[in-house]
Length: 214
Ligand code: AP5
Ligand code: MG
Picture 1 (cartoon, protein in one colour):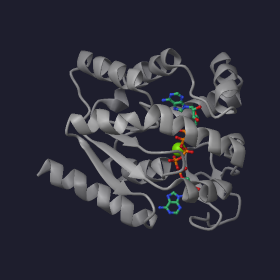
Picture 2: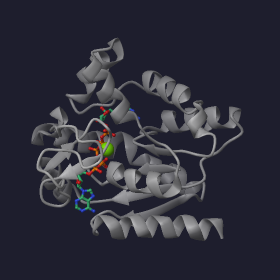
Picture 3: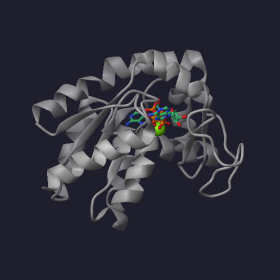
Picture 4: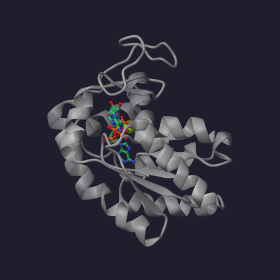
């Protein structure tokens, strides 16, 4: 399953809820890059130069990471992609790698939110290195600055500065939004409104999945 949508639509937020409800791993290429940046790996150094500019990390680098990750044992019963694929070539390569594993994309959830709401959301976002996402107003942690789930200190993402957010939105409209047609044509895309309360959107997606399973 894939979660598609502009930066700040709520992919990571919904992925955490869905991963817990469905008991399948949540794979975020953004989180993988951020943990490499934190550890100072060569991949992290490379990724940071693109991420801080609001650009996409090159396809070949990103595809290799995903190919490696989805072959891990915990992906045997399915997995949830957050932030991948993000370009048509990534989607085509993803289809090919799944075919080799005798798998396929079953469902793509497109979470929409207008650009104006996104810029507001990003300024209040707080992240944890465990992958949890908070918002100072919309989804505050129980203790300010501390993750409810693991107790680590929350941080502000470097790419959440307004000018970088605007660049990320531009990148999304140019390179990622064509994936909406790509998956619509395959008949596997469902749209959900990302401006509703977080729990309502989670329920809506779980209902889509339940209906699909019949
Ligand atoms: P990535 O980490 O994937 O960032 P993104 O797509 O820009 O999306 P975000 O994580 O910013 O937003 P989100 O949709 O997860 O929203 P969230 O749930 O946090 O990628 C970062 C960078 O890495 C990219 O720019 C690129 O450079 C690189 N990269 C990653 N994948 C790549 C790929 N495949 N190819 C190439 N490069 C790649 O929610 C946002 C805020 O809103 C939170 O504070 C949350 O609490 C709040 N919120 C969420 N839902 C609601 C709601 N319903 N109501 C109110 N507030 C809400
Ligand atoms: Mg995210």
